[in-house]
Length: 82
Image 1 (cartoon, one colour):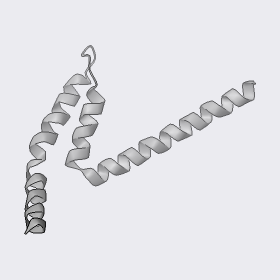
Image 2 (cartoon, rainbow, N blue to C red):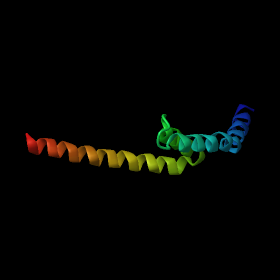
Image 3 (cartoon, one colour):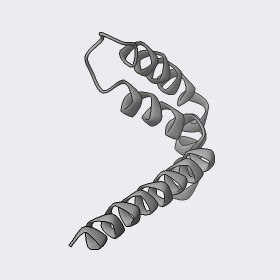
Image 4 (cartoon, rainbow, N blue to C red):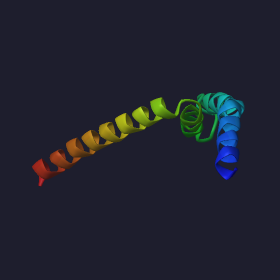
């Protein structure tokens, strides 16, 4: 019985998550405009993660890879200057 209820709850969440994700993306886009303070890109990214979890995971992996590449370049330039 518990497993069946859990499956039903998960399905219900999967159907309803778009009602949370889409407003998050819209609010994030508005907050990303110039002269509007706030964490707009982070909020929009959270909405994308909710709406498209697999694509969001790929995007997060890509961002981590780019960050590590950038840090590696910065570390190399610091080592060359020393």
